[in-house]
Length: 254
Ligand code: PEP
Image (tube, rainbow, N blue to C red; front, side, top):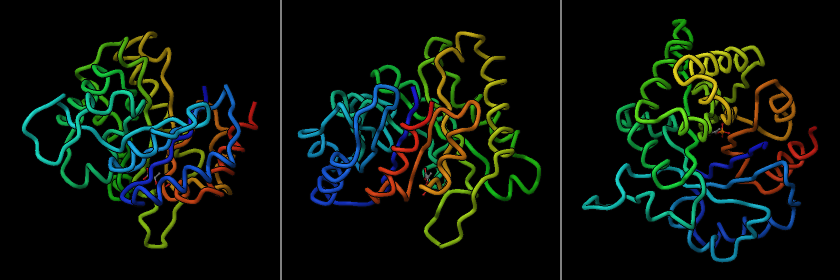
């Protein structure tokens, strides 16, 4: 099933979030072939969940803790998200940049699976790594390390988002769109590695997303590429018209 995930990042208070959801629900039509997931900040999840039309939208979190409970001030565990969030973004480059390493990400992946939350694992190289010819190594190293606690059956349930850090919109007006060959290269790397590590079973249900400055003007080209099962959308997911347009393009594909 095609998957479009909106990452709202650190934006919108509960009132603003509920309004955005209402507007999205008015614009989006349910489609059994396309799953639409929004990932608001934690504080917005509960108010949104109360009135959500789950036939149209599902909820995800932007992060989780790796344990189910305990003395961890300010953290939210996957167990606390049960019934609220079906998905969790894990290993986003903005969190890796704040110090999250692959060891921690591996524990979070296991925590998500343990709590029946589908992890959306983000991998991708920085501009400097790309310029030094390290893109493949970074993707392979991140994936290998991040999945160490999972079995082939677990891996079959995950979503992997290839998000080259250089193409993510950091709000500085410098937007770089990845070329199809960049994405094909990354996807081939990801699929080949997962097949090597986890066999046929590991890749049997695997969904691969692309993320990086996806917008209504560029989404079709990405979505039509072989092996692209959907998109992880940042900035454009905060604009209900843009996000609804992306959803419509996805729903219109064969
Ligand atoms: C992201 O941060 O996951 C992302 C894809 O952001 P944007 O679409 O704004 O580049």
